[in-house]
Image (cartoon, rainbow, N blue to C red; front, side):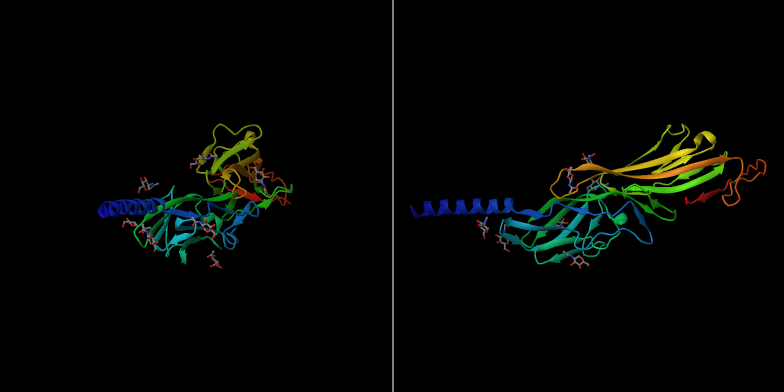
Length: 276
Ligand SMILES: *[C@@H]1O[C@H](CO)[C@@H](O)[C@H](O)[C@H]1NC(C)=O
Ligand SMILES: *[C@@H]1O[C@H](CO)[C@@H](O)[C@H](O)[C@H]1NC(C)=O
Ligand SMILES: *[C@@H]1O[C@H](CO)[C@@H](O)[C@H](O)[C@H]1NC(C)=O
Ligand SMILES: *[C@@H]1O[C@H](CO)[C@@H](O)[C@H](O)[C@H]1NC(C)=O
Ligand SMILES: *[C@@H]1O[C@H](CO)[C@@H](O)[C@H](O)[C@H]1NC(C)=O
Ligand SMILES: *[C@@H]1O[C@H](CO)[C@@H](O)[C@H](O)[C@H]1NC(C)=O
Ligand SMILES: *[C@@H]1O[C@H](CO)[C@@H](O)[C@H](O)[C@H]1NC(C)=O
């Protein structure tokens, strides 16, 4: 009789322990939304993640019990890039909590989208959980000048205005950043010239002629959230470039049109004009 009871008790204890093991789970913030003040970030003065913008996770046994962490690794799903104590941004342990801390990191350097937090607890439980980073689209400029348009939309950016020689090739940059699902489309009111090409996000127009003049808009979109529990939706940022005047010679803005006859050059120069 005694033996029978003991057997039952052991079975119950084993079963209970098994459930504890299965029940260990990662707990943390579901996502972080990195705020972007406007559409223009520059290498010299980049948009950066604000203080305490972090992903954090921990191992929970139940709602009130965390398990100590033996090792932790954050992995960015799309690129497989991993983050630990030695990376930028670093993963820091704060008691039983692992924190991937984006504070101060330029937004253009932050991978958006899904991260997986992998935790090994000190008693050999291996668990993981998914978290997301959202960054609304913006433009991160290297060297060209840009300014905000005069409407009240801080994500409408004015890029270059240029005049160029007939026959030359123009490249309009679109240094879009943000995400996940960052995509770039180009538009012109009367349609893009058929001969246009893409180099990544940039637009290339070869063999320029007068019919190519116009307003070229790069529209960058990304899937974002505005609040941590709100649904995903798509936000855009627009960068507009102008191809003002196509001539058979270089236009000098200061002295007006040169009356120099057609000077076709092998290596066509173009001048970047900044609007008043
Ligand atoms: C893991 O360790 C914690 C205490 O460190 C303990 O409460 C828990 O029961 C252990 N879980 C397993 C599955 O061994
Ligand atoms: C993140 O890093 C910043 C700067 O190093 C620090 O001030 C802040 O306390 C950290 N936040 C967390 C939650 O660890
Ligand atoms: C966790 O703690 C709260 C209050 O301290 C209690 O109400 C709740 O029942 C506990 N949950 C578990 C799973 O122990
Ligand atoms: C957890 O342990 C497994 C098996 O030892 C190992 O392959 C894995 O890399 C460890 N994960 C972390 C986050 O250290
Ligand atoms: C990431 O790693 C997994 C497994 O290690 C592999 O299946 C996948 O192809 C990798 N993805 C990339 C983008 O390298
Ligand atoms: C964004 O991309 C992910 C995969 O990377 C996909 O599952 C999701 O549906 C996409 N969302 C939108 C709105 O395109
Ligand atoms: C967040 O986006 C939703 C649409 O998905 C919108 O209804 C809501 O007003 C937005 N909230 C803020 C604070 O912008």
